[in-house]
Image (cartoon, rainbow, N blue to C red):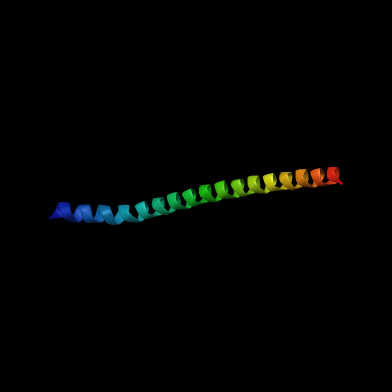
Length: 63
C-alpha cells in the first residue's frame, strides 16, 4: 500500500516536469521548422529575383 502511495507521489512530481520538457521540445521543433521554411522562402525569392533580372537583361538585348 505504501509503495503505491510513494509511486503516486513520484508520478505527481514527475508528470508536470515531463509536460514541461515536452512543451519545450515541441516549441524547439516548431522553431526549427519555422527557420527552415523562412530560409527556403528567402532562397526562392532570391532565385526569382535573379531570374527576373536575367529575363529583363535578355529583353533589353532583343530590343
